[in-house]
Length: 149
Image (cartoon, rainbow, N blue to C red; front, side, top):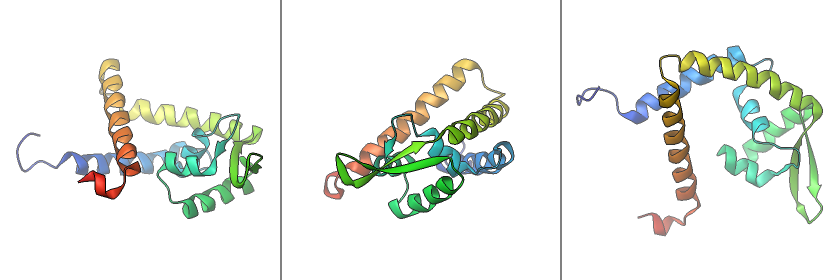
């Protein structure tokens, strides 16, 4: 795959992402990938809605639509931040925790299937590299446009 005709890494990552999204729909019990991503970013203390949007790389308006569906399903609750009434805190509910536990099992199976050809060390390396790329992208997104040149 080193010849100039082979796909660029970004293309391969896009193909992998499509595969993950398509296969995840089969593995997730009654929720979609975006719901799963949102639920897995929540903890018992709750997360400010803006930080959740940043963590999911989502526009605030799209996040509100996503959260509306999760709230209607009883998987999350939103409350005003007592320290700043303009902010909302998003919390996972007991029902949401059960949904997340089932979804985690489905995603673990999917991950096992996708990465079956890799050793444990290769899987760890792949995860480290992907986390680093995402971290760098998040840091870059926080920088003002003028300083990125």
